[in-house]
Image (cartoon, rainbow, N blue to C red; front, top):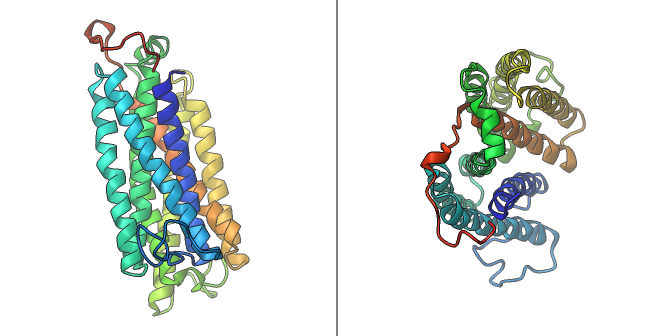
Length: 313
């Protein structure tokens, strides 16, 4: 694996970690552990306070992701200029991660408005998708790997199209989930799958918010099931289909179970974090399906030489 590929993959994986830490910040109520931004209580080092340390850790990892996004863009420009998709996707990710930082600052200054917190979460998922796209495209630009994909050029694109639909629906599920968690609606419904003994919520804003999240999450099963079934049936033609289908199904089932356990056990921190982290992993696997379906490696004859060709990147 070349350096550029390692950096792109590390960026995607660390973004998943960042999303999990962000969930931990919300679960522990540490969003205002540092009430100012970018400093923490006016300094570069947080005070010896649990909430401040948790929030500072989140900011530190977010800054690390930002630097890795920039490094990925630089390496993409140096080593993959023949592939416009790689170059431009990596470059666009830079202002995206900057926007993510701005949303984080707004979250602090406005003292955790639920709609900004939810948007901050979904923006992180978009950054994850971009960085994963860059990594897989770099991977497929290796002649040994692009050949495998080129042999599948006539295969159906249905698995990828279903994955796109599932990602779009999952984005809505995660947005309302982030809003629910920050607005205090997470504990509005006792019991699962019923809400305080009923299928429909009472005339209460928090119950309604909570149940919208459950309804959307429940409907997501149709998107996931369709993708998994179609991908599994095409496993003989698509080299990635079987492992991605299995991983997506297992992760989705685990996420649903963890969501139920969250309600039954009153949202302990580790289960809350696991629920968001599993959603990020589902996003991860679906994104893999999309990229393997639609990315076309640049033909060897169209690849332009780059400077410093002797440097391994």
